[in-house]
Length: 276
Image (cartoon, rainbow, N blue to C red):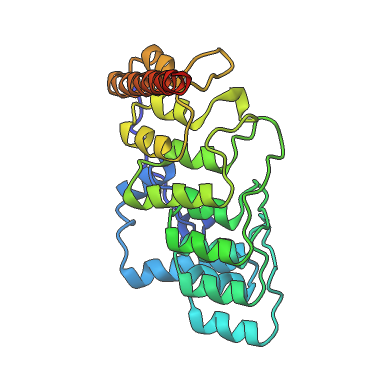
């Protein structure tokens, strides 16, 4: 007879007890089932603080940036702290401030001269985190205003930040504004170096995302762009049985062809009039 599974327990000094798990992870699910998981807000804040202090090896600036302690950040900057200090994963105070969503701390760090283009150990810049973790037009603008760049690909299979954002956005009104901002700052809606020549419109088609298709077309996406299999976005929509996307792309193609035909007729009439 199988033994009933026991819920794993952690002591108060266990790192697993102190470091919050990713939502939905097995550890998080077990923690929620535990009778010891119900804690007060104050106890939760204390555990977060202890975990953060452990991870940052007591670096005061990183701790202050992550918890959003504006007073501490201001005082540390005035004292001349090492503004570009990195933790064991290559993250700076700006990475943490962006993730916390505290734009005042972000602004203080940027005005103090922190480098907005430092990549952490997995290649994420503060701008990457702004778009992937907590999309914010205001934060993105702050970063661009202080020198943030859309960095070039390090390896051929790197999709690049614009495509990454396209693949994860809904898009909400905020997402649409961010997409426009990225294009203003040099992002290519149709990127000849995209892995597999898959363009943003291909991804929108295969996800049946008509709102995304519409905004990409506004931004100048090529309706007939071909991927490495010589497939247009409409053909990709058909392959993945995305009916709404297919219908929209087909309508857009028909409208485009009608405009081209009408333009050709007008030009022909003009030439005929000039000859008479």
